[in-house]
Image (cartoon, rainbow, N blue to C red; front, side, top):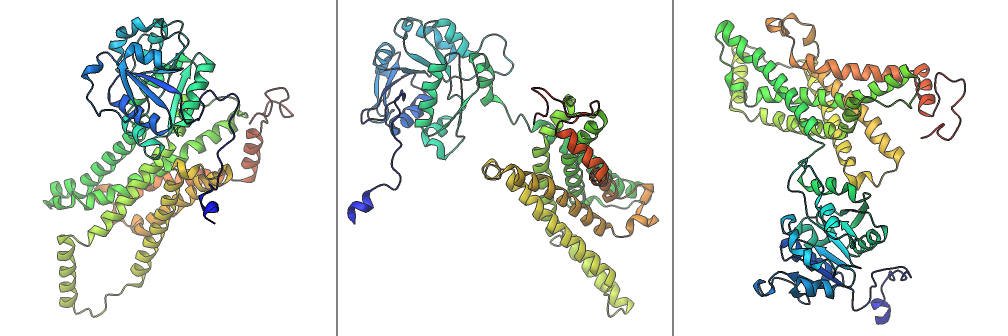
Length: 480
C-alpha cells in the first residue's frame, strides 16, 4: 500500500530523441550576462526548473553575496560564456552592448537570447535584437522573455502572463528557446523572424493599446449626457426661476447619466455587426474587405461591452445609495406631512407599483445577463467554450441584454415620454435620448433576421457572390 501511495498518478512523458534540453539530474548549463533584477529572477526560475546557471558580470567582486540562489555561479563574462553549453542570455541594457564585443569569438556556436525592451515607442532604426545580430554575425540571436516582468519570472507561470513572444531568423535556435520556455512552465508564441523584434520590444511599453478608443468614446458620452442633464435639471431652472438644484450634481445627475452611457455603449457593441451585414448585402460578396474604421470598431467591441457593464454596475450601486441621501429623507418626510395634511389615508397607486416592480425586475435581469457576458469575455472562460457556445453567449445573449435594457428604460419612463410636462424647456428627458440608438440597433437586427435577408446573408457568408450564378470555384472559392 505504501508503494502504491508513492507511485505518481501521471508518469512523466517519454523522452524525445530530438530534445535539445535533456531533463537529467544534471541539467544543462545556461549562461546569463548581467546581474540586474531580471537576471536574478531568471536565475530563480532556471534553477527551480533543473538548470545549472552561470552568471557573467563585468566585475564579479562587486556582486553582493546572497544575491543569487544557491548553485548559481557568478564569474566574469568570458567565463560565463565559456561555461554555457548552448544558451546565453543577454540581460544588459542596449547602451552596454559595447562591453560584449570582446565575446564575439567565444559566442560562436552558441545561441544569444536578448531580453531587453525598447527605450521608447515608435523608434527609428534597428531594434536591440537586430543590433546584437549585427554585432555577432556568427551567433544566432533570439528575441524572447522581454514581455515577462521580473515578478512573473520569479514566481513562475502561476502569476502574471504565461505567454512568451519569441522571434528569430534561425529556426533551430528558435526551437531551442521554445523548448526552454516550455521547461520553465510558460507558453511560447512564435511571432516570426527577427524583423518583428521591434514590435516585441515595444509590447511591454504599451498602455492598454486596445482600450484608448473605447474609453474615449465612453468618456465623451458621459460628458454629453452629464452636461445635458445638468443643463436641463440645474442650469435652466436656476436661470428661469432661481431654483437651486446644485445638490443633485454629485449623485442624482451622475445616476441619471450612467444608465444612458451604458445603453448607448452597449448599442455600439452590436451596431458594427449590423453595419457589416448591410455592407455585405449591398456588395453581394464577403471577399471585399471592410473599411479600416469599421474593422477597428469591430475589434473594440469587447472593450465597449466591458465599459457598458461597468456603467451598469455603477448605476445599480448609485441607485441603492439614493435612499441613503439626506435629501431622500427630507423628501419622504415632506410627502408624509402633505399626505397627513390632505387627509389621505391610503396613497397606494396600482399603476406605479407595477411600474416600479417591472423596471426593477427587467433591470436586474439585464445586469445579470451583462455579468454573464463580461464573465465569458475572460480568456480563461472563453477558451473553455466552443465557437457555437461563445457565439450564443456573446451574440444571442448580448441582444437579450440589450432588449432587457431597453425594456428597463421603457418601464422606467412609462408614459412620461408622452406628457408635455416632461419636456421642460422643450428638452426631452435623458432616457428618451438614450433609447434612440439602442432601438435603432434592435430594429435593424430584427429586419436582418427576416428570411429574405437572412437567407441571402447566409449564402454570402458561405462564399456566394451576387455576380455569379453559382458559388465561386477554384482554390479560393468558398473559403471560410
